[in-house]
Image 1: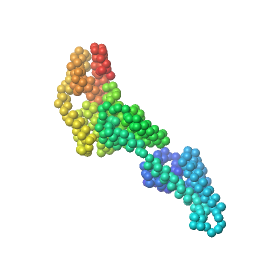
Image 2: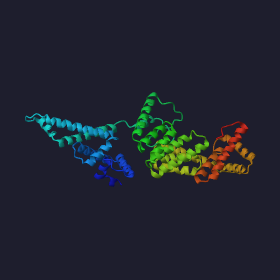
Image 3: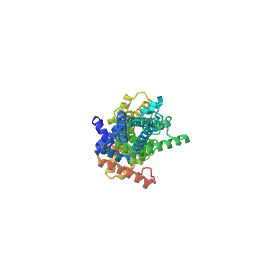
Image 4: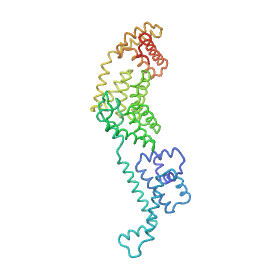
Length: 415
């Protein structure tokens, strides 16, 4: 597709606003964004069209097409005005030139007396100005790089954000220092402005990353989902999964499970798109571990991660998580028996027996606790597509919550 678009005729038709096919337009704009050489080729073709218009070399149809594009393209109007002024100045010098034998500088002056040379100079000047503007923008501070630098000492999320380096996770983070607050405010304004001017996958992803670091999870999710409308991208899926994972920490149990399940889905999509994306492999393992539904899969996921990264500080965290999982395996059989006894009592409407089992485990606040096991059971059923078992698990959690509220005025278990 790219080769078919990269020809002089197609580029000229695009610049004159005569391509109406949306698919072709999107493909051209994607190519302009991704291919610097193609972008330069288009810029040169645009300069030639403008030069031809100023010199009166375009036919009536092409001139009319160019004029129709000027209303919505202030940059092109600027180029056209500049070319006109340069040519007018060159022609004025030609008319007022001194008639005696020209000096060296006079000879240079004569060079620009002819309209064709004046027009060529206009094209050259426009190209130089465009290059200067491009280089000045390219040389401006990278907002995301600056954002990453702010979190070099302590990372903002438990999960790995794409392209962020390692930093330990500090459980208690104070408010950013005033200098960092000013930097964050400026970065946010810059990213918002870039997204408003040019909404695409890159700008929306960048703004989403900013919101993720600030724990504005809903805003981050909105930007990441907007970025994915431009096409699948492993890093965007990874960061979207991070937003769901981090948001789950603030949600009640049922919503928490939904967010964790969604995070696992996004991390899985990212690893399918890029099997070597370490951020997504790490996060997928973390999500499996946090869900506590498939410890064997979580262990295998951590081992896969360590095969690809065995020496970084992230690998040290992976080993600690793997060791924690392995130490918990001895309790699985007992947990399953507790859950089975409770479910049988609940199904038989043996409320006294079900409440007794709950009372025996609720103080543990770890794996044998029924709320935790029912949460895992809900997620497993949801992953299998077993809606009946998922509903039963949620209803059972509600039963426990209602019991605690009625008997002990305790709202902790009420979702």
